[in-house]
Amino acid sequence: MSDGKISLRSAVLLLLANGIGSGVLVLPRAMAAVGIIPMFLLLFMGGIISAFSTWILLQAVAKTMQVPDTQSHCLLGGSDGVPLAREHVSSGPTYGDLLKLASVPWASPFLDIVLVLETMGALVTFALFLADFLDQFSFWTLSRNQSIVTVVTLAYPATLPPRVGNLARLASMPLAGLSFMALSIWLEAPLVAGQGKSQVFFFRSTSKLPEVLCICVYAFFWHNNVVTLGRELRDPSTMRCAATAVCATFLLGIVYGIIALGGYWSWGDTFQSSDSIMDKYQKDDALFMAVRLALIASLLVSIPLQVFPVRESCIGLVKLRSPKHAPTTVQHAAWSFFILFAIACTAIAVP
Picture 1 (cartoon, one colour):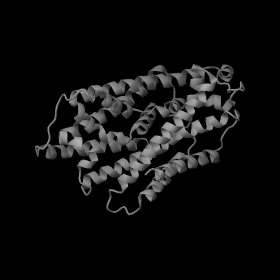
Picture 2 (cartoon, rainbow, N blue to C red):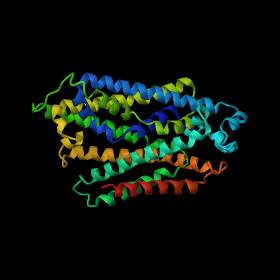
Picture 3 (cartoon, rainbow, N blue to C red):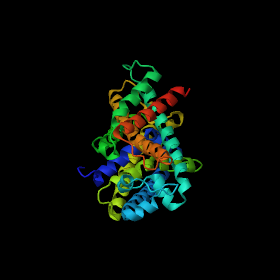
Picture 4 (cartoon, one colour):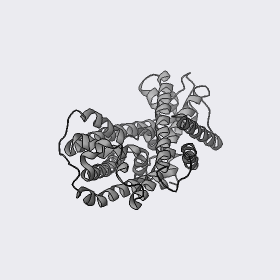
């Protein structure tokens, strides 16, 4: 990445890392609600929606960056008609810039606000989830609030680089963690399923289809970072943009399907009384203690990745008043600290 650009492989892994969240734990329960075949069809639909929208965003970034600088200055002018700083134009468009091109200039800050609120909400959920997850270890003695502070502290160093592509070396960890989880579930599946305490169905109630479709669509949600990655993708041709979107969706869909089927085959209808698949295994089970640690490591990579678009949107809002504002490395670090501090405070305040 000597030229500041990332390879197709790195882009795929970064999308995967950004998309993996605690929602994967409810996929077997979702399959129990609708049956095996409908679940795979819904996962396929969610994947198609994600892949197509990801490709559209990557193409929008690529096409905008191909516009000559003189036209870029006019197209990406500030809301008051003042062109954006040249270094901002050359680095590529933001989400706000793309919306400005597609609609009206005053719509851009609304998108930034929505992106900040949505992503901050997801990050608060991650902090709460990890705090509860850590509490399940017998050796963990910190309180819930101390665990939340520990989580955001561990995540902070990875938010310091100026580009999301700098985290490419860590991006394989979430996929490895999810793959390890899938393998562990299937290693235990013959023993658990052999006890004969559960039933599995190829088709189940159709009343839950809309609800499960929402879960499947959100399971592939990494779109808050697609524009950021699109700016850093090396040689963003139409085919490479499509390959990035399709490969990321395909890999994640395969792992999701393996986890959902393995969990459902193991526990069947008993999922109706459980919040997640991890509740089905003993807390002192050595294999699933390792799975929990792998999931914690995965989310500690996903959290910093999602801080980047929040930071960019916050800076975009500042640019409304100061169009030529170009944040320094220290200011980037300060923004990251403020964002994680706000996440910790909100998570602690949640009853």
